[in-house]
Image (cartoon, rainbow, N blue to C red; front, side):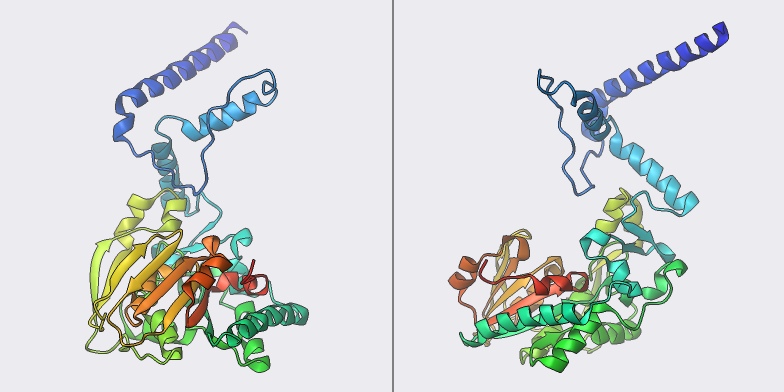
Length: 371
């Protein structure tokens, strides 16, 4: 009995010493250690003990402590490396570990890209009709004002690079909801729709560089160029093909993207991913007027096309915006989270592009121009 009691005392004393020592070391070394928040959420703040909060205080303080423990990122990174390198499993269930250090996205609440890949979230006829009705409502609005209207859908990464997906997910289904919607819209409307899946697959087969980031959910600057070229073609502007000899794909620095960040392994995954730039097309002396991801990308150029283009966008527009902007005298890209009808009226565009990634196509059924 005394031995058991002594053992418990040793464990308790060791815990106190290690805990106090870690805080002491943090005070001395914390400013030299990575403490960036990679979790895409707000970390818990220190709670204040009051007469009204004492019941919840222990739980809230535990949350605060867990989010602010000394050397937290270092410990998380160590754990993530052990899980990835030894057990081949992610520490974040929103990340799918593929072959050859490819990472993919899995979040049912954020568009459900795996559902798109496997085709278990298909639309009903009523769903398709409801989305179509909303798209036609937008089209009527723009037709009445002489504004061109185009829907642009960026394909999910999982389908473009399906050969690196884990075997448990199988091969990508031939019938999936984005394709359902596109085929339905083309059969029942004259809406202008750009879905550059075939263009991306053709380019992927002909060039050696990746066209999506290995460690990010998005296409890179090569994929962005291919997507932008498809959209520009719909708008009557021809860009050099990605295989054209006048273009040059330039490798730049190593990089690691949002999926690597979700695993807290940005530095580790940098060795496997690259930034590229595409050079050789006529950028028409493009000038960047504003470059704020959360609000607007605004460009002016010497392009002869004087139509003003307005792009309602998500994050996939980041790597197409400069290409589009170079081909119009004035271009304006507004993030979907900061869009307002007043802003649209103020800009008074000649072209309106609704840009979305494939996993968000459902929003075409709920988006309102005027609200």
